[in-house]
Length: 351
Image (cartoon, rainbow, N blue to C red):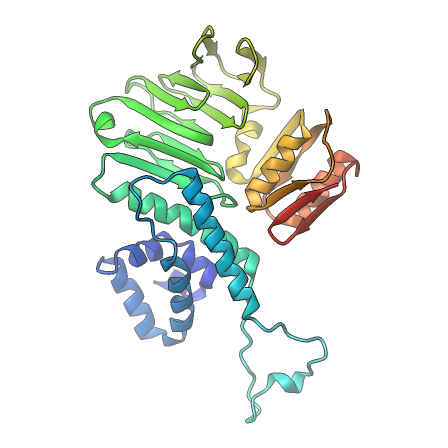
């Protein structure tokens, strides 16, 4: 319970135990928060506001589709906008005396960080989807990570792990896995670390199928591009109508709609750098600059507005998912200010 003493609203909405309490009020989790309120009643307003924000995010559909995630995210942004509108900012001309009560005691002026709350709610949405769909009796187990959310770690039934990037989904059949068939479907970008000696592990994406025995690999499938990277072990990549390809460590295959074959290339960086997006570090070696702008927008949950044709410009560099200001500095440095990059409310503008 001690960890909750320093929690703010954004921390509560991103906490798995708190999310479970909202989903299942009669569960054991409720006792923790009941004791917290008994011992620290001043926490009541924070918990009430966190509950209000989360109750609008409960998942009730049989399957979670990307369009549903987008709709839920729009509701999140609406909640943040409403919250911002209800907060009267501290005016520069306010004197220290204006921050005191009539009795001379200091007023408590709450500090709200809308950006942190937005990220907290994005993480909460991913948690709620995972908790709800991961515990209900349905045969379909599905995880969905929201646009703008940090990397989401998923523990698979065989002990393998998966990291879902923002705006990505993963699904599998509970009964098939119980019978030894390790097949799953993904959309977006997912990185896997697969347990060995438990049979074939197969990942199906919209543009192809990746099959392994025990390895670490990354699958990126967005728009017209499929990219598979092998870090350890051996990976087989298949696409209907094309010859399959076997990837060894430090190899990757790229495919764009319209290509006649799967091509094998060397990884651009060491495996540790290639895998670092799960920790919020994104590195690129001469990739189309539009892909980088799209990833930045995805990481911060922004709409991308291109006011200029990116043409064949490429990007070599990196950015970290820590703050918009530092991300802009990294982009400006790598692009040598060839593009004017502006961050506005819910929007990334490139001119």
